[in-house]
Figure (cartoon, rainbow, N blue to C red):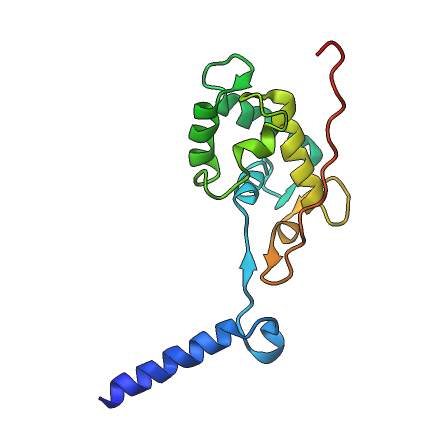
Length: 161
């Protein structure tokens, strides 16, 4: 019986520490952070292993990921192609970014331009010091300190559409 009370008290203390919010290392509480599904993909773009993702590595990574997603090799992603890619690369379609984040004109296909525009906007959102490269620390958000999504500019209409 005493063991159950002790374990129950330990669990309650642990939950209280986790629920207490900000504080982190200053008061010996654990630091909690968020890592988004898109950051897993961005980390994979680090081709030279220097723990930073340069603009050139972003370019190469975007080309590689679009080619991976475009199973039909027709230059556009159908909903099933996007879902297959999201399951593989992002860990599932429930984590985001979502298909409609890419398909802003809601025509049910994602072009290479739409794919690149969404992911480049996300790179800019993470690039806190605006140097064009992403470091590991820029990809992590502390719980309670996540920045709200930046407003996105709508792409200019294409001539002839």
